[in-house]
Amino acid sequence: YVFFPKISPIAGLIASISAYLVSYVARPIGGYLFGNYGDKFGRKSGLIWTLLTVGVGVLIIAILPGYTVLGLLAPIILFIARIIQGLGFGGEWGNATTWLIEIARDSKWRAIWASLVPEGYAIGGLSATALINFLIASEGFKNFVDFYWRVPFYVGLIMIILGVIIRYIAMESPIFAKLIEENKILKSPASLVLRTRFKEVMLLAGVNMTAQLPFFIAITVMLSYMTLVLKISSKFVTFTTVIGEMAGLFLVIISALLADIYGRKKILLLLFIIDLIFVYPYILLINTSNLALILLAQVILMGLT
Image 1 (cartoon, rainbow, N blue to C red):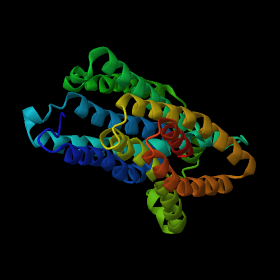
Image 2: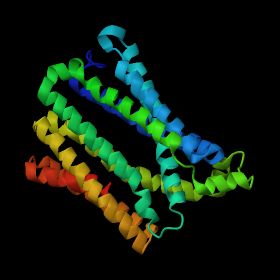
Image 3: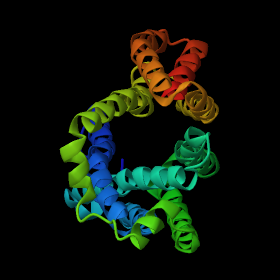
């Protein structure tokens, strides 16, 4: 409506999904760049810069005029902003997980500590969804499209400012601090990892990418498919997303606990296999147009991923 008003609804849907997808494409690049930065200058500094990078993308989108003002330049800038967000988020995930694991280096529950990263992501998603639904319900869909869709981005900017302040006063990873004392910081740590552990990196990247793909489909393509093709109420579709994210909050902790008890590799492979197997039943359940089965499908898929 705002950035792609001159094309058909289906083409607009594809364009919107593409704008979302470019963020995912940029994440591995951000992970490499900011991961290398974090290994050279510290997790704390890396986390500040990743959050600031995400903030730049959020700020651009928050103040970006629509197609009626800028024409074709509006969606182009939107894509650039999403790429910037993706770069920051890719670096954010890796630096935050590394920081937590290094602080909990002596704990036997390191997977539980690491699970706080996806837990935070899920809580943020739930909060944003709740705010969007509140704005639509209170202001109406038309007013939401005209202006109020920007409010979550403004709120996000406030959270980013608070996050930067918190990270600035937070402690550095004790492991990294020790490396500085012993003068063991490498010039290009990311390049070294790729040279010496390329196979392992590609394997884990492939597993993660394949596991995240169903989640991406569930929160983008299938939501639009249910609304536009199956003619299911948008409120119910949004409700399934909220419940699915709530299930994810619970299952992340459970899977982390199992990983600490039985091993990371075993649980990772088990969840990966279950996730892939469920994709086809998921599509069948959605196509029934039965609300209970759709809710069940969303909860299982989003919970697993």
